[in-house]
Length: 236
Ligand code: ADP
Ligand code: MG
Image 1: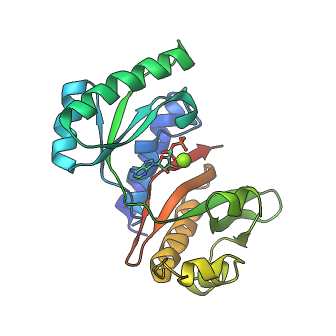
Image 2 (image 1 turned 90 degrees about the vertical axis):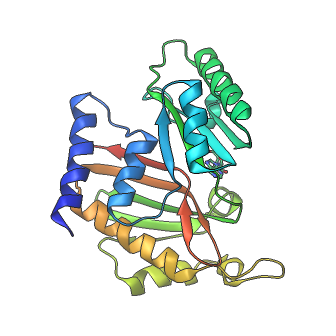
């Protein structure tokens, strides 16, 4: 582990702790992911509509806007996520709408800003997680998104630290693995890219014992590469 990456990660974690926050904001969690080489959607935090439109121009359309607030953990529940915005005026309207929705959801929510981010093309949704097992400590989880996790509980766990071989098993031993391997109209997913994300996630949580929970949900799996669209990190 590069010392500077760990230092930058510790700085983000300490800043949150100093503010009495246990849940990192999405941009904070994504900056940490970037320090560990985990691919995330490009993003910038805007503080007004005009700035949001400028950032969208820089990032390239279409974009997604999301609320950044320590008081809104599940952003879509609060009407805090708007996807597929194609023009500067879409972005400015979405900015207003998101603030309106969030105020309705929680009038006292502290607003840090609005995250403008690259819209990732749709693909197979996977979930990468880390929890602390009371007995075994940091444990890494992998599964496919939606019904696979929620209904079928088709997920695999390994105690951290994990090797690339462990990560590959976590993926290939899923019941839903045939979907990742390629199925009818679905092209095969880049398994090595997912392996790399799992190994990096293991390194991330081993390096930072203050992390109680990590949730990359979803990580979109592509034919070439993979991309984290949402990241949550909860501290002890
Ligand atoms: P939350 O889980 O806090 O409600 P997310 O950031 O996961 O919010 O956004 C909700 C959903 O919107 C995601 O599961 C995904 O389907 C979609 N989404 C969010 N960000 C992007 C993005 N950058 N590109 C494509 N889809 C996105
Ligand atoms: Mg999410």
